[in-house]
Length: 307
Image 1: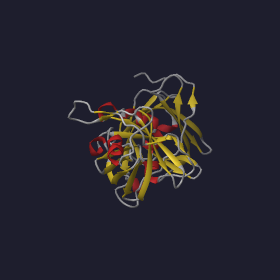
Image 2: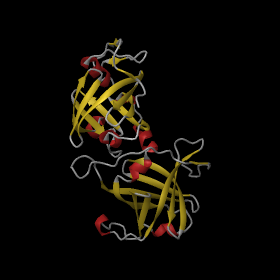
Image 3: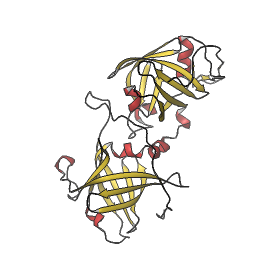
Image 4: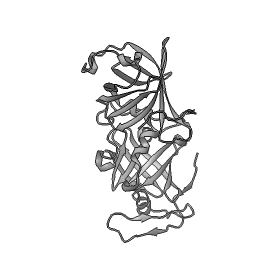
């Protein structure tokens, strides 16, 4: 399932007059067959965004399937497996998940959880690489960025369904005085989960301050996050309650622990705080949720929230 050309041939390296990093420029998809030059390529960008939707093949490399970004930090491989804390954890590079060494046009990764993997490295263009696992015939596309030019905010909007699942529950902390009375006023906790049949949510009317472990879940149903036509910074959320109809919201991310839900029908604004943060790959039983190809449905609506 190879999509690019293996790292051999001629290498063009531009050494810029900078004390921060060495810039490696790929031209014509060829890079010299050398462990040293393979390392220069992998280390030429601070972060590599794993474009999970560009994956080819029926297999998987587990640690790439979980990661939003990976970094090749001079022998240490780092990953952002959580959206919460991205841009801050590990100085933006994420947590230490293993070690690597470079071979002739390949990288050998010894991952703390998933063991040893040898991946062929291909140049796609001047900031894009392909990592190819020959055992499963699977290719991953990674795109390189420097920390000071990486759009951490956009990752939240591109992966909101994962972000909502990084807390054990979301507690309502604010309800606007403006807005018509509606049934959602009574719901104080939300939980977003992934199941074998798709994503689903649960909600609770337990009082504010109830610990997550003591919550009684009163309602359940499916949820979906939508892109909005001609408005790339807006996402919408529908909660489809079993046997009870649905609620429709505009969804805004305030920070990595706070979301705002604007209930369009009642014109009420709610804020929710994340409770029980789930940090992945800090222990053997929390290795993280594997990502899958997702293309959000498109909704043809107009933003209603007056900011």
